[in-house]
Amino acid sequence: MGDLEAWLEEGYQRSFRTACLILGNRYDAEEAVQEAFLRAWKFRASLASGTDFKPWLYRVVVNTCNSKLRQEIPHRDRRAAEQDLAGVSNIDDNPGRIALSQDIVKALQDLPLHLRVVVVLRYYADLSEREIATAIGRRQGTVKSRLHEARRRLAEHPALRTETNGDSGDSDDSTTASEVLR
Amino acid sequence: MTMLDEDVLTDALRDAAEAIEIPDGAAERILSAAQPPAPKPRSSHRRFLIPRGGRGRMILVAAALVLVAGGVTLPLLATGSNPPKTVAAGPSPAGSTVPSPTVVPSLGSAGSAASSTNGAASTPAIPSTPVTVPSLPPGSVGQSAKVEAKGSVSLTIGDGKLDSAMTKLTNLVASSGGFVASSQEQVTPGQSGTPSVGTIVLQVPEPSFTSLLSQVQQVGHATSVATTSTDVTGQYVDLQARITALEASRQQYLTIMTQASSIGDILAVQSQLDSLQTQIEQLQGQLNVLNSETTYGTLTVSLTEAGQRPVPPPPPRSGISSAWHDGVGGFVSGFEWVVRVAGPTLFALLCLAALLVLGRFAWRATRRRML
Figure 1 (cartoon, rainbow over the protein chains, first blue to last red):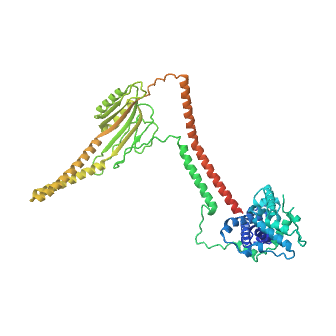
Figure 2 (figure 1 turned 135 degrees about the vertical axis):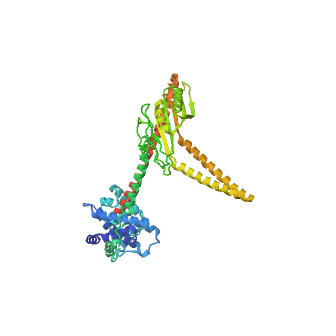
Figure 3 (figure 1 turned 90 degrees about the vertical axis):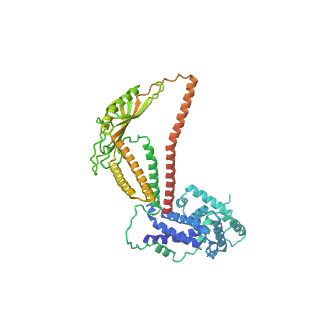
């Protein structure tokens, strides 16, 4: 159990938040990450020596999230609103940044799953394109094209367009339209 | 093309993620769930030859595929080989009424004879000694053994020698004290290409059966010999006993008849007597048939003239006719080849498809289980 404890200490928080961003719900994310860690621990022998642990663990997490979205969530009633990420934000020092963050999360939830996963893994989990390719079981070129497509779609999302347009004249906002859209 | 800035995206996602609270005690719940369950007390230790779960199912599916493939392939492989031809046995032991045929096809030289011994196995050629039906021991009721002997011989004779062979067989059976029960000849014209054939059924006293069988095989080239010897002693004795009992009953009814006074009694006794008389006559008839069959052995001889007469060659075809026939022949040959190849090909494709489905299933199951 010592190794599992180390795994949890090292990767639980980031895995949980990754799952939250993918699934858009804390409750589902907690279940998915718990299942992912148990599955990874059960099949830890399949982790060949020399293989990066991080993308391997994320692969398990992503697969568990996929399973949850495919099998359980579509058959369930609408999740409790307080568990949705849209209402969660504790950034209290910069209202403009809070708004942008919430809008991006909202736009992220509107992305197709395969694009959402690569965005979260790349820009939150900080995985390289090669590691993402390992995590989702696709080629690196596929990852690159998906990232490109995701960024394009996010930029065209109405919430981000409104945000950037509405905040363009606000001197207190640290994020300007030119910074958001390049 | 408008693109969302990567740094902005990174910062926004991190801000959003940092705002997500980590659930309390989640790590502890995972740790407790990861604890191996306490071993259950086992009253009896059972082990399964095939593991349960997906692996076991895969093994079962694979085994079923192998069985199906074997079941289809083996008959295909066996199609080319000839079935076994010989079944040989000797006469029945005393008291047995089970027929024991002796068949020896594809024989060697002319003049050879079949030998039938108790429990003998098949032989590739006819042994030189004739079929012998060993004398059976007397029955348990003091009745001498009653044996039905039947046999058949197929002979190939020289071209145009059918009549002389039939005559020779008739003389043979007459010299053995028997007679010709029936005969049939089918003589075909010399240019038809079909050999003449004939069949003659010989009845010969049972003691002379084996010697006649041996002599018959000298007439031509024996291609098959089959004999059947059935011991009917038990049946014979049973018929005798039933007749004796019915005779005794009949005698008693005759005595009663002399004492009957009323017409009703006389009619009743007469009815019983009639019934008894009918039964006695039926059994006596069966006994007579059995006597006849055990007195005379039956030998059926089939004669076939050797060789097929040469068929005159067809007149030579013209160029166009020859080409047309060659074309038709080639088309038929090609079609036959397609039909011949289609079977194994279809089977191979089915096997391949089954393996692909199985492999895909196994790959997906393994992938799902690993992660």
